[in-house]
Structure formats: structure tokens, C-alpha cells
Image (tube, rainbow over all chains, first blue to last red):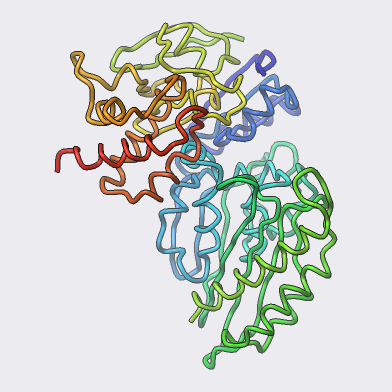
Length: 291
Length: 157
């Protein structure tokens, strides 16, 4: 476990400078965010790079801002900062749930939401959570222009994303919401705060009477990459917090719909059981937070 | 391949030319010759024995490169005791027999020191959650949790 030689290290202080450095090194360059996954990959030499572009000194990529248009989370915002931000409570509390239990204290002190999304490890919490809460991601292209796309479109199979060479993920956007909304995320792993064998995120929006008008339900820990369950989302429409049977049925519908894999940590049917059990719990929590 | 960095460890600034690929833990142990910071899991990032503080925050020094610490302040276990006098946390570890072989202890101290600064009156559950990233294969953790709890009571204020 030791990195292969690295020829160049750049620590730009502006996004423009970082994009320029990436452009001038082409496919030889790679960004490092918090490094809590990438350092492992560099040491095992799964990843080798000639040029490492460290994003940690770029202030414009850090921090959480809340205004009338919604929430903007800089890509280099660390888990510890998301875990401690009470402004996310309620509608976007799933992010707090996820960030509070990523890895361990040391990992949360350096690891970032943007790094997790761009790495898109199979057992990661941020990909299903951002998909679950309906986040949109803003990327800066090489020429400085921006594009936005949904987390769902950005996240692909494990270790794959829609990010193109030379692009940098700038921020994660959560829309402003009218009315009552709540979300929750929970994972199950072999030990406390371990990598998720399955992680489930639920988001519900309620009308004045407490009935669900729209829901999102996303699952991570899947060989095909995180995905939504339309069956669960449809089943939750019109459901109230008190309809515990309907909530459990929605989570069960997700377990039936989603294809799972068996491996050393859990077999296929156990993963389905986790989707059902954790799913029921996060839907109930999301309802409670919306109320 | 190489880069000159200026890293302050326990108040002493070192200016050195090092390979870019060098993990921070190797800089601390091999360049600064501060061997209190341990490597427990062959750099896999899972054991927490190499935990140090970067600008006062607990981080695993095998999960970052030394060049990333350029211009930053690093605190290692050697930076805790002042003038040979142990901190309340170190004293509590001694009093509660919170170590056996001691290999994990420097990392645990660096995590717990930061934790207690942010949460001066923690519950047992909070202490255990704070120490998730530090493995100990001797004590079974009970004495470590007791020591951290006792140290919280000893902090001034």
C-alpha cells in the first residue's frame, strides 16, 4: 500500500485555476477532494495519476448556503459540516443522517459530499441520499461554462458518473419547497457506521391534511448502482403518517422491484429484507419530520 | 516528483523537500522522527492508530499526503504533554488502565482530545461513537470509555 510516483501536485485557490490545471494535463490529471476514498485507491494503485489537483484550498467550493431558491452545498463541504447543519433538518435531514454516520470522526473531518458523489463507490451513502432528496448537481466545464443535471442522471454504475474529463463538480442544489416535506436515510452495515450493505433514503411531500402528494425512495449498495423505486413512490401517494400498513407495503414493493445481489456480506434475499425493513423506518421518519 | 513543503508539527516548522507521493504519516515518523504516531493497518485507513490533528481536527495521517499539509499545523501525541506533565486525558488513561499494549493509544488520544473540546460533557454513547475510527485489540474499550468520561469531568470549566 504505497502510491505510485506522482509527478505534479497542484493546490489551486480558485476554481478557474483548477479547471485550467486540469485542462493542461488532460487525462494525466485527477482531482483530490477529501481523499478519504481516493487515497486508498492511490495507495493500492487502483488509481495512478501523474498530476494531482487538490481542491481543498478553493473556498468557493465550500460551505452551505440557504436562501429563497433553496440550499446550495459546495462540493468540497465536509461531512462534519453537513452533519452539524440544523438548517437541513426536516425536508433535507436525510443528508444529515447520512453525513453523521459516514465512516468515522476522522473521515468526516476530511471527507466531502462532492468527493463521494464523484467517486460513486458501491457502498456509499451520498449517492442514494442525493438521488432520494432530488438534488441537482452543478458542474464547471473546462471552458468555465456550467451545466446542471440531477443526481440521478449524474450517478451511474459503481465508480462511474456523468462527469467528463476536465469537469469539476461545483455544488449540490436542493430546491426550495412549499408546504411540508421530510426525508430520512438509514443504512445497515456489518459494524457501527460501516460501509452500507444497503442504504435507503426516503423523501415525502405532504399536503395540508398530511397526505403524501409526492415521494422519492432511493436505495444504495446495489451492484448496478443506486436507484429509485417507482413502485414505492407510487404506493406512497395519498398515504398519511398513520397508514403504517401502507407504508410497510410501499417499502415491501421497493424490495420486490429492486434487483439485489448476493455477496460475502449479505445474500440477495437478505438485501431485499433490508430494503423492506430500513425502508419502512425511513419512510416513517420522513413523515414525522414533515409533520 | 518532489516538492518543498513547510509543515508545522507541535509548534516546530519543518521545511523539507519530499516526494509528492509520501503519506503524511511517513513525514511525521520518518522525516520529523516523531514515532509516537503509529501505523497499525499498513496504511489501509481503517485502524486509526495514525490519527493526528490537522489544524486541531482529528485526521488519519495515512489518508492524506504530506504535501497536502503544506502550510498547516499538525499536532501529534508528542504535542499533548507540556513540560513533561500529562494532560488530564492522558492522566485519565493512566488511572483507568485504558491501554494494554498501547499501540492504538496515540491515535485514540488525538481523536478523544478533539472530541472533548467539541463535546465537553459527553454520554457513553457519544464517546463510543467518537471512537468508531480507532481500533483497540486489547482493552475491549470499556476502560477507554471510562477514561474519556473521567477526563471530561477533569477539564477546566
